[in-house]
Amino acid sequence: MREGFDDVEWLARTRAEGDLEAWLALVPYARRIGVSALPDPQGDGLLFRLDPREGNVGNVLLPALHGGVVAAFMETAATLDLMLATRAPRLPRIVDISIDYLRTARMAPTLARCSLLREGRRMGNVRVCAWQESEAVPVATARLHFVLGNPAEAGA
Image (spheres, rainbow, N blue to C red):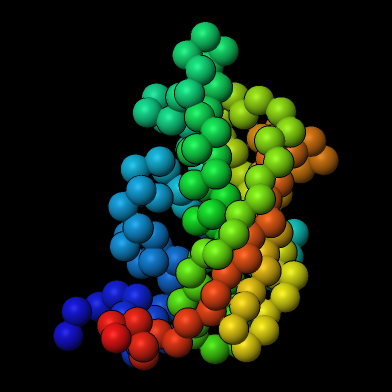
């Protein structure tokens, strides 16, 4: 059997182990833009990291990260954080995203922390804050709404 998000046993096992690297390996654009996750030193959650890469540049004159790369980073962080934080293995599908770009995201490591605002039977809401030098000075914030699916029904 192929391992992946549609394999309920694999999803439950990697979730229990907190193996986000296995999840990130299945998301090609996350690998391409340089997304990684590590335990949050300030809590029991995760801290997500976006490495500065030449392919992520949107404005070569500054240079600054492309806004779409920042959005993809925040969406990936929110999705994976939600998958790990839910009461049972669930597959979130994004319904809506609202991003506030607050300042220029330079070519520097970008970090993000997520907060699960609500997990219902069918919907989940996550807030994401991304920063570079100081968490008190975010480069962007986002609020995402997800439909929470049953992994057993993913292939259907």
